[in-house]
Length: 427
Ligand code: LLP
Image 1 (cartoon, helix red, strand yellow):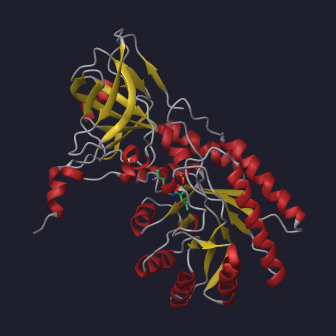
Image 2 (spheres, helix red, strand yellow):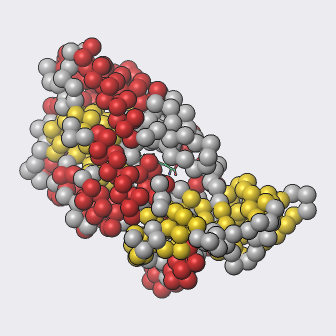
Image 3 (cartoon, protein in one colour):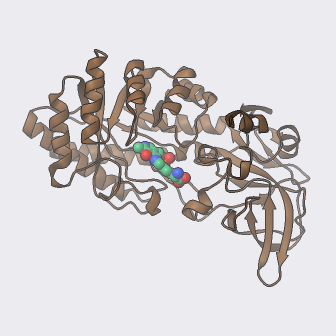
């Protein structure tokens, strides 16, 4: 976890730098990301899966050029899902063959760019896309390596908006009714495509491995049907991302080596039973790598006690830098980090500065009763899906990402400025 300690005055120190200095130098709010923690989590996934498997970091969780370089150095591959993510990956030197391109509605321009760059795989999400990618590959005179994304019909126990394996939704091609088998049949006939495998992603922030086991079982079942019908054994399967992290002390995440062991065992066992060669496995963790590596540092503004209810603590950011509480009812913790306090804890709600009452960062939190304007508070585990989902709502400027390591801090994504906002406003 993050290299976080407290000094004698109760000031939090991360990566060897105290948060008061960070706030002075870089302002608040800011995402503070611990580079060593990121690298060690990336490495743990890489080591757990070993040489016979691939780990694709899911760039949607958080992507920047520094992150791409760290991943590259740690031997991870990268999953991108838009032209913008692809451009970031390529511009920071990720070799194209280590990039997977995802999405349920890739544009023709995006597909051309990905195929032209030589990405290692495109994950096909619909019957139309099978034909579209095959056509573009032929036009460019290449055979594009592809996986077919299937929905295996399991219920992952997570929030409805981030579950993706049930059939009534936009991603993938259902296994049900032989649709996925039909998709593979068609893709195998197209000479612009080299079908390398099947892809399944069941959802996000999942703790229970049983969903993955059912998914693996069903994907191997499809591999067997393909072998029986076409005499081809597809060499790869990708089981997606989705491993949960601890947002609060109630969450109990699995370690990468446990996950690797469970997934490898189940795939191997199922393949032995079906007399199939064990395919090369890949996974796509995003949150599990970057989520715990950053916290958001805020300055406390207005503190408003409401008699008999709670105290509203307003910070200098809000739903524009963390939409997850409003969108998914996500739970976070928060602590005072710029000093120690012996004051009695008070029940608070940490809210932002936006013009709506749903602008909540932490719904229920105990903070010291003497909390005052100017105090710094930190919300941990904001590395994933916070900066990447940040907005300019109310023309609030998106915060920087400051990476800390060995007592040094450096901005890897700078704070937005009013000039940035006005540059787009050309009317
Ligand atoms: N692979 C695919 C195909 C995905 O769609 C996703 C996430 C991942 C991998 C990475 O999942 P992870 O390991 O990060 O859970 N904005 C939501 C999460 C949306 C996830 C979308 N897809 C949130 O803030 O919880």
